[in-house]
Amino acid sequence: IILEGFEFPYELVFPQALDSGNLSSKYDVIIFPSGVWPAATTAGGGPVSQAGANASPRKDIPAEFRRMQGVYTAETTGQQLLKFVQQGGTVLGVGRSATGLAELFDLPVTNHLTERAPDGTTRALSPEKHYVPGSVLRMAVNASAPIAHGITNPVDVFFDNSPVFTLKPDAMMQHVQPIAWFDTAAPLRSGWAHGQAYLEGGVQVLHAARGSGNVYLFAPEITFRAQSHGTFKFLFNGIHLAAIRPPASREQEAPGRMTEN
Image 1: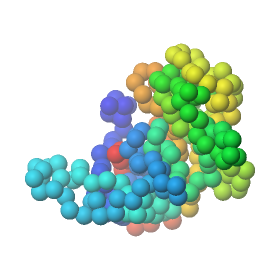
Image 2: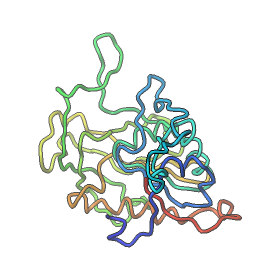
Image 3: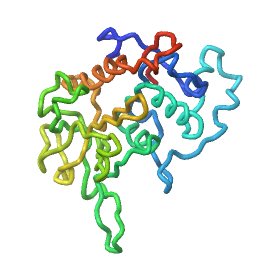
């Protein structure tokens, strides 16, 4: 609805289309809304393997809907996305899709919402210590970054138990930059936030340069209804910036398009 309302041409795509490859000849930017790309659920940090899940589409589904079948996997879809970005494409990940994409692209980030357990290990905070359902929070923004063009600093965002990242010390060396983060122990603007102090210092928007392309991760729900109107520009800027690609990545390519999953 947002893309239609602001007159961005787009195409809805599904696992089979991305798994087929040759993405850089078809698209400039691929957008993963919250919850579309699988989150990392294995100890090794990658999406759970579902190899072969796309191999045999069900025949009892009407033909016009069969293209919508399948699941995204690190083994197949992930490899095509890695190639797409290396060749100059842009991937935008929103909300819970951001964590799985961070794993896929091997970004130097960790979960910010953790604590030290009695045995010395690190564990995720329990809901009893941190819980922020559907509230408006305020975050600081590097307004000089191209992805943040036109966005106020600070800016209010819609946060629904969203991911929060910590960048590793070598993140800058790996071409990963923070774009927006919580710079206060009390970012709550509207709603309620139990344990909000844990958010301070956590990164909410980041940019990773990979090969000739780019990955932008937006942890909060930057397009959720009218509450997020002030952060729509993160998405729009990501789309516009995707059109700026090195000449080498455009050789022998047909004009690309934007795609949303």
